[in-house]
Length: 160
Image 1 (spheres, helix red, strand yellow):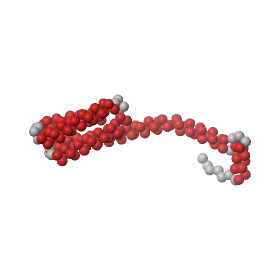
Image 2 (spheres, one colour):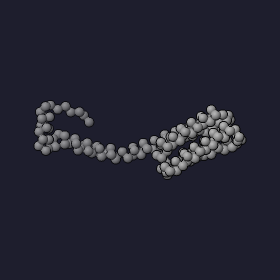
Image 3 (spheres, one colour):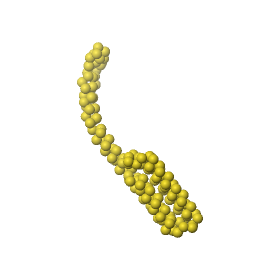
Image 4 (cartoon, rainbow, N blue to C red):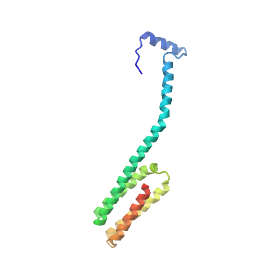
């Protein structure tokens, strides 16, 4: 749309016409703006849907990356069952759970807040059991692996 430069006489006549209740020079452009807005408004739902789809895709990629971090650290914990590795594993699980709590309900609406809370509590209980087993060193490595698999399974429930 070209820019028009008006002289003072045109500005004065527009102001006088508007004061009298007429449309003046701005009336036509106001109608054009309304028509343009209607055209943009029709495209907004399509754009919004694409934006939501892109956000979900990025969030799913973040969840996948966080879950792979948990799995990898779980393998390290199995190879070297040390308190330092357990601490790193718990940090990875915590990061995953925090992300799901902040963004998970937006990703999958079929998971209710109550179900999410129950799964998070179960993960926390399993982590405590894992810490007890590791520190007590009474349980076999296979039992440790079973606990890690249980935690990974619950995290997958959150991710799905």
